[in-house]
Structures are given as C-alpha cells and as structure tokens.
Image (cartoon, rainbow, N blue to C red; front, side):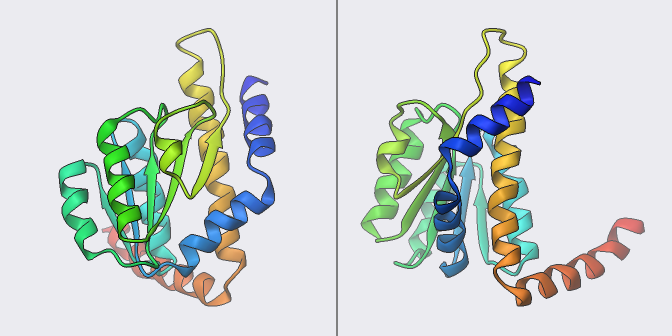
Length: 180
C-alpha cells in the first residue's frame, strides 16, 4: 500500500508533459551523460543500459572527476542526467554548472524536496516517497523512482519504431552471451 501511494504521488508531481519533456530531451540528444553517486548509481547504471539498448549513445560514470573529463566531449544538444536522492552533493551541482556552460540540458532526478541540485536543472523529475520509518523510506523511494524511470523509458520506446527494432536486435545479440 505504501509503495502504491509513493508511486501515485510521484506520478502526480511528474505529469505526462514533464515525463514527455525529459524523454524528448533524451531522444533528441547526441549523447546522454548519466551519473549517480552511491546508491543512486544503481538507478543511473540501469537507465544507461536501457538507453544503450535503444541505440541512444550514453556515457555513464559514477565518479565526478571522470564525468568532468567525459563532459569535455559534450555539445549543445547533449543531456546530462543526474541521479541524486537528496540533491545536496556539491560535486554534482558543479557538474550541472559546467554542463550549462556548454549549453547542454541538465535533467535531475531527486527526491521531491528543495535541494541545491534542482536549482541547476533544466528539467527536474521528482520522487515522492516519505515514511517516518528509516527502514521503509528507502524502499518507497526505490519503488517510486523505478516507476518514474519506466514511464520515461516507455515514452522513448513508444515514440520511435526504429528504437524498438534496435532494442529487439540488441536483446537477440545479447541473449547468447547470457546463456554461455
């Protein structure tokens, strides 16, 4: 029940046009740079793999120094996706500022709270997951975040038949590697 409530609240604060804007920015990007630190990297890594399977060029890093070096290849039509539950890491804010200087689009994925990282976002996707119990709140956050990312991924798939074909081709190429 609490997971369902968190997913519903997250859906309400990310209306279809916000999800569409994020998916559209990703779809139009030449490259998508993706970073998340600590637990946030799990979600960043998962999305990077999914985008790669769709044929979207992704650059995934879990280290701000390595991402800074990678961003030297960024151009104005690229996207930086920054995963940060609390949105308070100064290094991620610095990456956002650097990316803006290169005229790229910064998309942040954070908890629905006032935070420094959101101030650097062109597009902010938000997760609503609150519980007084410290052992429950991360579970709610994870569930609501996955639901939100699934919405973005589905938009990307449904908007382009060629992407769906690439996905199928990539899955067929990968399957033998997983079976050996």
